[in-house]
Each structure stands twice: as C-alpha cells, then as structure tokens.
Image (tube, rainbow, N blue to C red; front, side, top):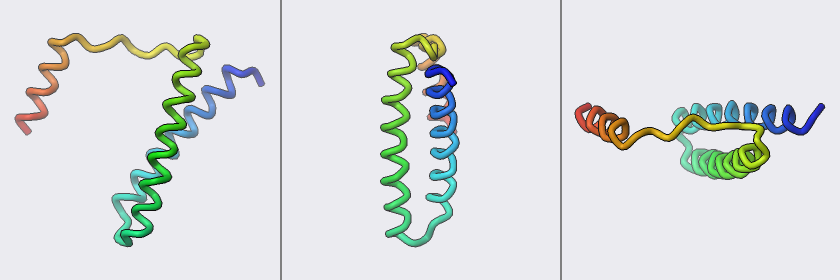
Length: 82
C-alpha cells in the first residue's frame, strides 16, 4: 500500500474515532470516565491535525477554499439568531 493511501486511511479512521468519542462523552454520566474520554478525544484531535498537516504538505490532501469574510459574517449572524 502506498503512503498516500495509508495516510488517508488513518485520517478517515481517526475522524470516525472522534465521532465515537463524542458520542460516548455525551452519554457518560460518570465524571471520571467522561474526563478520560475527553482526554482521549483531545489527543486524537491533536494527532489528526498533525497528520492532516503532513498530508497537506505532501499534496495528499487539498482542503476546501477558505470562506470569504462575507460568508463568515453570514454564518455568525445566523448562529447568533438561534
């Protein structure tokens, strides 16, 4: 398997794990377990970001274009009106 495929597979797996952590966190009443899951999620997010930066630098991943200031303002206004 080539490096690009491996990196993309790990990114996808990490993304799925983050969703699983989030689901477990919001369903957990035990504060000690909740904190442990939050710590694991935070570590996983950091790992994902570092791997994303590697993938981007090697041309394995091209993120979407940045939003314009008008788009950002529109979303902020919509969210603040909820």
